[in-house]
Length: 382
Image 1 (cartoon, one colour):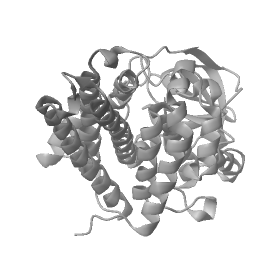
Image 2 (cartoon, helix red, strand yellow):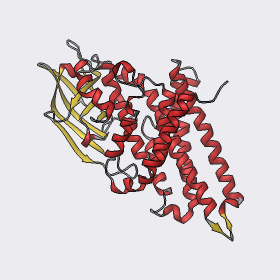
Image 3 (spheres, one colour):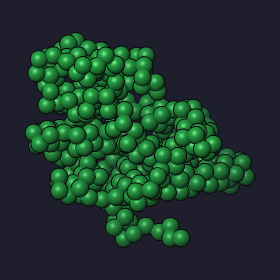
Image 4 (tube, one colour):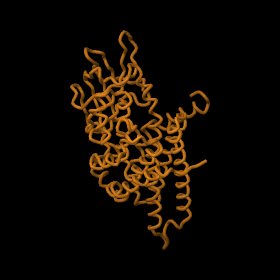
């Protein structure tokens, strides 16, 4: 069994590692304090080809696998969770459905510019009363002359104030049917009846602007109904496992950054005339952090490896996301404790890691939902 990276995978990892070290990490604190979307870095990541990685060369992509994609995600997150999350959203959820379901016009006007970062996309699923419970969704799409009329509200829409287009999940009924089922629509910026609400104040990933969105009889042309009526959930489930693996890769990145900071601080900080890293209590904590990070890395990369080989990966994706994000949260907590009082100080990065990592415990499925999924798979009821 060969666990080594290929030459191409290693080259991609090194490219994004150098970029994170030179361009992202030195600015991470400043970006966090400014609470502003990192537009310049977002564009530079696009120039590196990150948004193109997952897509085939026939549509302007790079035709790379999911393993190298996750390697790049990890390195970006090591530099800044806010930057990495914004870029990961663009490269996966925001553009996936345009590629899979969009017509030629949509791909030319929106998808291709999005691969360069010239247009920004957002995905709209969560509602005030519907998160993990997709069937509790209340946003409705009513058939009208020439298209559809959307009415409803979405919450936690990443990059909403900046987005040029929105992939919206809403309930709709097929012609001649009464039952409403989840369907995917494309709504463009400036559409009548589309209202971008207030930005939500968050404890972490503050530069990742997140807002409410409202649809007040918002007209969507028939050409911008992306999925067959009622097949939105099916298309979402196809990509959900990849979203979870990607979220696990984000966890690896921030966990590495936190562990690196903890090691550096434990070598510099002195108490009783010696670096605190020489004390057994700190050594035991660092050993646990390193071991759990290595285990998380193997889970995430194995799940990504399964994706690249077209093998079943539903269970493995849930396990990777669950373990990697919980591990990342624990490592950030351990780092804060190693920093002690300075872990509470804004001038040190420990507090930022602790705030930002909480984001990963929610997106892509909460740990509680993932455990239910894994339990069904383990019991053979998946």
